[in-house]
Length: 311
Figure 1: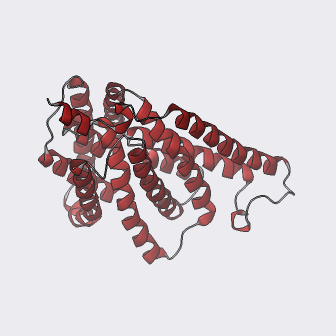
Figure 2: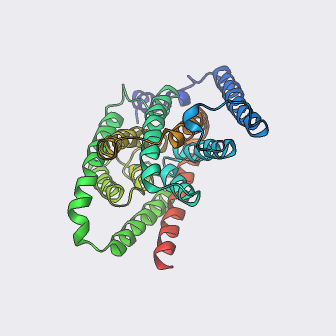
């Protein structure tokens, strides 16, 4: 393998372009901002007569706002670090908290759109992917975005003819198989296969259109077994899914007319604040560790999905 090829395909951060001072400053600024928001909400909880929150959030208790902010921050940190988990984890928590599905879905889509777009740009800035110079990464992102955009249409058309139990079982087996493949080939450099990208992207898009979730595990892990480096796969998934979310969000606005800003604001703020730390985490971790984490998490999600179906 030539030195030119290695230089071209190695992320900037791994070529020595990362600046430790910038990372330290980012952590300090991030910690100060998050701590400031948390302290502000704690003051509001302890002093109810002091008006800190805007009027449109009067329907939520300050402790609920704090919980939503921290939950979104944690879930999006996981999502932007391993390419999966935000909607899958956050939506059930919001349902348990008493929010209605028509409240939750557009708010999650809005926060996923903004954070996915921001995460894609931050991954590019941190050297995890090069969307400008790497044609393969750029083409993969566009391809996955196009497949995702038509996934909802295909789901509505075909879902009536396929039993949901067997569809979910097949998807769970695919997720588990992909995770096992990642772990089995952890020390091998896999060849890029465009056909595999199309197949995985189509299945993931259909599943997302049918159930609203499961996109990240299939697309991120599917890219890895199709020859895309793990760090690039995480970045590509973030950006591709953000473009998918704006399509779904537009549809919800056209049908229902509005978004519940009382819920959308703390979710979006919490999710957005997680992105700088998540992309920095991906940059600092060794490639083999990112790949191992993807394999383990994907296998766990596949097993949990199968257990949920059986029980």
